[in-house]
Length: 584
Image (tube, rainbow, N blue to C red; front, top):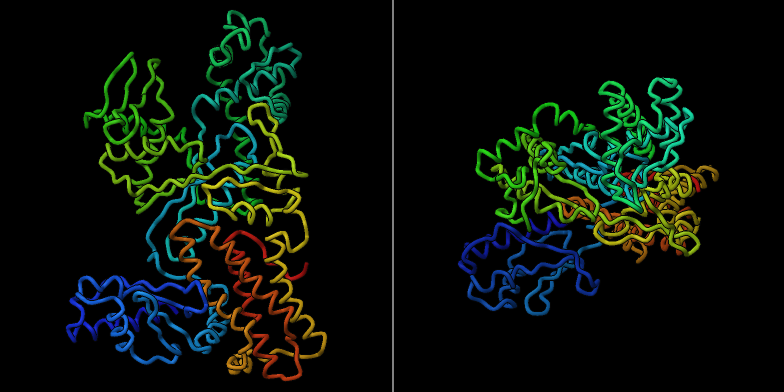
């Protein structure tokens, strides 16, 4: 309906331009839904925007605009309000027509070609494969997947990607942790490092390694620990774990160390992949950091920065002059020991993204990475790329509550709630819906008890119940030996004049606008909120009126209306990765 009103306004503006009332027709015409029903259904501030260049009072210009509008059956009346707003009151037929539109479009209702097939990459989750996904990762997964689906729904070609950090220090800590647990299974008495990974999953990987290789990689603990710097609390835990990694590499040599490393990596990566698939999150590509390093892309990125004069050497390290491009300080690219930093890999990865031809790239990161944004954008600018092509969306972690008490979590100690545990406790539907109910940058308190509750207090249950209720009406119809004549119902939509019917029709007409806004603003919570409002409109209608009435024409019209509501509920829930059950 917005598009139709914009066309009418453009015709009116062109008429005013021909008559010399306004100097030119603006390229952009803004029409918004009225917040107060007393102010009509839609409103525009065009007269306020054009008053100054036209040299006229806004209200006078609004009256001229209203008089120039062509007649349209959808518009019942137009009023000039306040300092110069134009309020549109639509005829009931304009809303009644949405029922046919929904039912004819089916699962495509709400979708558009706005994006024109332009390519966007969305990279999300990308958790280090050093342990199972926890509930914090779950929010990034739900948010990223929904942003990708929304962008796809409005016509963008979306590439969903997981960046696998399968190189670097954290993976070495994991591999060493697994090997130490393996030594314990071999009968060695190991002093496990303070900074090692201590979760039960490390034992599981070590057990698999032991089953497949026996004691082929066993080394005496005395030989492993000899001469190592002390661990915490007496010493430096970071220096201790780094020395342990070096000792593991030396004793196992490249082939055995790589075996331990790959067993750990593949075990956890397979677990992450399965977890995300069960959560309804599917990727187009799992991009390997190790492959990026092995291809020489990291060194290529560093060389490009060096040739452009954006690096310098200090204390044996190579630094990027990121402060010249808006970062708070310069950053290390190559450490004094010759090892490239994670940041260097990240520069190469983003360079690779843009080289693959994506018009825009979207990174979904945890909010604790906020300081990383300026340095990545600085690197892109220094490389000669447009940093405006990169959007970084920061997601706050979710805080779990059970029985009113906060659930404590610590990733390194292994004391955390995994995404898999959350799914088992509340279900995928509740988890996906709850995760996107708030803006991504807002803290989310996840009430486990509420998510399990089968009541109207539970927002996902409330929305799904609306869909199931419509399905139950059609089952009742069949049980009564009646059939729904859709075409007869569509021909009688003018019978839908009750206030509850008009409220529901208005909600249905909003859906395409909500999808577009949620997609372009990267705000899935807009869709979640809309579905709750649509469910409220339906439940209110359900409680106030009977659908299976004796008047067969009115019955078919009402059934067509609630069938449209069922379709929109299913479409919206589908975009959130939530099912639309027929029975509850």
